[in-house]
Length: 203
Image (cartoon, rainbow, N blue to C red):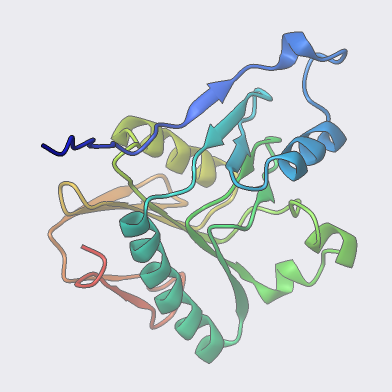
């Protein structure tokens, strides 16, 4: 008889490494080195300096992330007023947190102000637009907190997609949050003119 093992997606963990360092918080150089030594993990840092370690996404989650990024990328190429990024891109927010949205977009007028060295690092800029896709290991509350952090740091529009309930939360700079239940599409006007995220392949 064959023994079956059912694996659930590993959860992210938050690591407070301040007591292990000579400095109260991990410096930027130490954080870069930590990320370089762990290339197979997605790593973020919150505004407190705590490191959040996330395992690679399961295939299904990665597939949905890809479909989100493809739609944004096609629009960004046609619109030509900004640059799009996938989930591997990390940005250092004004709060000091380093975040890697599942997909994001930045206006060219802001992106081009950065130096080549800044662009080649965890760029010190907050995206204008972000998308977070909830995986089976994410709690809705933690992602909602992250979306508020994005807005507080300068994001104009953020989409939180919860596949479990087929709900999309639309966060805007004015503090409003629109809740869309079972939408077929999500319009990102006026922040991203003429960009509509089609949800059929994302659900």
